[in-house]
Image (cartoon, rainbow, N blue to C red; front, side, top):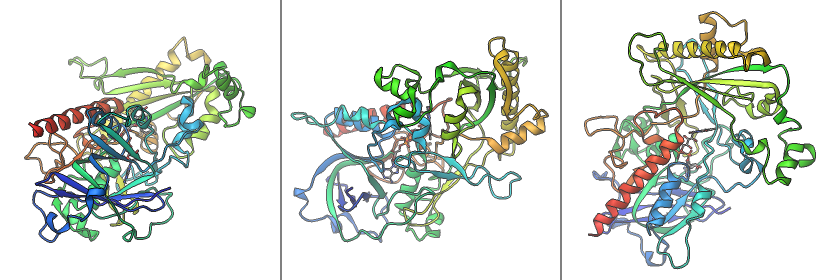
Length: 509
Ligand SMILES: Cc1cc2nc3c(=O)[nH]c(=O)nc-3n(C[C@H](O)[C@H](O)[C@H](O)COP(=O)(O)OP(=O)(O)OC[C@H]3O[C@@H](n4cnc5c(N)ncnc54)[C@H](O)[C@@H]3O)c2cc1C
């Protein structure tokens, strides 16, 4: 592994950003961007313009994070003819977990991929406590798409990857893993510096938790929170790390009388000798159940349900059903899924527009300090309890649907979660409070209008008060979109590419 430290300076007149890189065991990155109201204590661009940069690699854009937000954007910029350097803290893992679609669950706790974020679902003092909820790393792999457009001889555009690379801080330095399973901070890397020039912009796409972290470590955030951690504020943007949203999801699980025949022989293991399904999958070129990533049936309902005399609102509850055992994204679920899916049906009720607003906060100024992530579920004074009621009613509908279905009912042995004895409204609500989960966290660097104090980005994804810096990923929205969020992320990634390319063209006129 190569370690790299990167420092970025913005030369406003030259529209040139400079990055310093340190080559060490894994790539560790930091950068500096200029503020429109620069802190007078920070060195001015002319003071810090490094000498001898002519020999250094130069890029038009740096993109930090190659997930659903950063990947398509980087690709578009390269296709347009710009040179793009993409950093990602992850590396290119090519094993069964990343190859077999039905092994997606195994991928989410594969130690090579895992980031193992720990999240508090409720604030301190709430009558239910869930401070150790698991939020696995998102599994979007935009890198393989990008490789198809990487640099080719004779093309102007260039796409260069730095994997195993951690963007540590925009300006100073740090190191990635903020995961709870991370076991040691990096030593100072001050002494090993290389430099890269960035001519135009840095785009942060490090995801819902680490994009706000990078901004805060760089002095962009709520000044008082930054000062608590001895970080010198550069731009006071109180919205950074606020407005954390997610979908509310809750699982209902049924045991079937017999086993599903399509899982016959499947052990979900890594050795074909111990897993006939894996052996057949390999021999047949992927022609069995392992090539499915989900087997779902979906229904949706509006908040007021069918009995309302008012015109129905757009659907707000989605229920998806599949022939597997899935209690939600809880630690250990991949093993439960492998052991119990042969005779289980899971239905998930997903609330699309819940009222909860959470926070992402630093616990220290070192980039490897674990983030404090609070989802604050169901706390809104007016709508919080109603969210629980909506989920409760959704679970009742699922129960009725499964029991009453002539297609499914006769094959069901019993309900195993929450269980047939959980019947009263209070009991179902308690089950929801204890087992709610979500995997579409977003909105922690929200786009907003000029007069919104909590707006972090303007409508062109630019970080307010800072030049040459944008955020394009799940953190960019003001509100959680739709039922599943990856496609909307691809859409904003494409939109941001349009905006950036358009601006670049106009600046050349
Ligand atoms: C387990 C799971 C399953 C999901 N399944 C679905 C689904 O079925 N459908 C759906 O629509 N959505 C799904 N989602 C949601 C969706 O995957 C995410 O919302 C989406 O990937 C977020 O995209 P992003 O670009 O914001 O961040 P990410 O995809 O998380 O990408 C961020 C990238 O930045 C890198 N990074 C972070 N910090 C640094 C740093 N300091 N330096 C360098 N690199 C850094 C990370 O390594 C990562 O590759 C799922 C999410 C999870 C967690």
